[in-house]
Length: 248
Length: 333
Image (cartoon, rainbow over all chains, first blue to last red; front, side, top):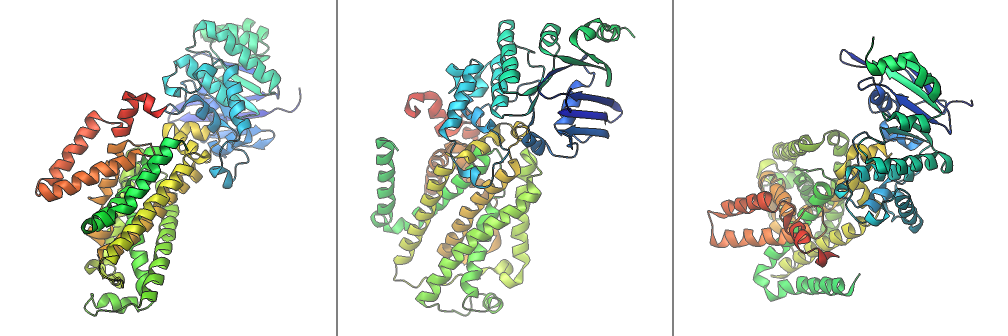
């Protein structure tokens, strides 16, 4: 395995007396799809929030492409190419889908003068292509807030792809989505990984989805890293089964 | 621009130019109308398009007024002596002194207000929602009190402005033209601005600022620039209004948080916030009602305006334009 894209070492994060992450260490290799599973409240989302700089961490280090990012702001980390999607969808509800896509275009090199430019035609075309990819082309002029929850999730995914991140952190991409849409969504994720070369780090509760998608899976429980390995190793690990069934 | 829109713009331009000639006795009222349009348009950039409800935008109006006045006077006289005289000594400005001073004053007022907004945004954009509204209100009240206590600029007794040198009747038309030009410039600038990436970005900040940050948007930069643009035009409005009034003082003329400061919010809400034309329609309705009630319902005028605002926020929360857009979507297609 080559050098890790994301390298977390000894990460600890507490909210008051509750230790949400305790001494967590893991790494995500470039170009892969890595899974993160664990029961509710095991600290998965907190880990994601720490990586993207949502809150300061108490101890440990987070490196992206070898660079320490644990003290950078959310915007700076996003501009480096680390992007997360939210468990509850976050779209710009009063703007139509195309405008949602356009504002998601990368801000990496945007200077003062770019603030006052119009979006070039290629960018609009790219936005429409990606909307087509997730199956929202017909709804592209509708306000994002009027879409169903599942459609908003697809829009959020298209926005993430528009942003051209190096790594995409997906927080339960299939939660709340109509089962018939799930296969399409998985197809999109695999294409994003294969064709656009975006590394994926996915929190997922749907075992069927994560086992077929990920090459490597981490399992968390009660704020600590419990196990890691290939999907087959994770599936057969008695500690993982215990954590999910609540046997301690 | 479509044909219909071009006809509409030309008709408004023609009407605007004709107004002070057709109704010369009301030229000042018409000039104040354009100030109201400036108020509503600049408030909406922040409150409507970006979702930051400022109750203190009047600060830039008053700041512009004072910067312009001090520039006009300071170019020719010693400011401390001038203000200490309380207008008891009448000083005459030559035509050249007057117009050069006014032009320079307007430019410095606009720039001064812009810089003030950029500096204030460092402090106040840490606040969101109602905290931002109260924070900005506090800043405006503080500015009024500071000016009130500062004897060098006349303190509470204010400043008598230089007298317009032209023939009788010219003064009204001159300031009418200046106010209309200011409002038109602001409208055209915002019309262009909302079509660029800037418009997209401030709308995104309004809908979900955290998501915008998570996408890597430089939100601080956009917010600072948006407020600076508002302040720039408000500085011009203040500079012109001060000269139209002829006498300025801090609490009632320069920083009237309870009248103009609230009017700008009410106008944008009545017309439909977050749209380009909503604030203009709102300013027209509100100002017409205000003038009518001040003339025919004196004593009840604030009650009438209060009722209008209540009906607006209870039944027409999207404002006139938002309501029309919902009822007659075909008109906006």
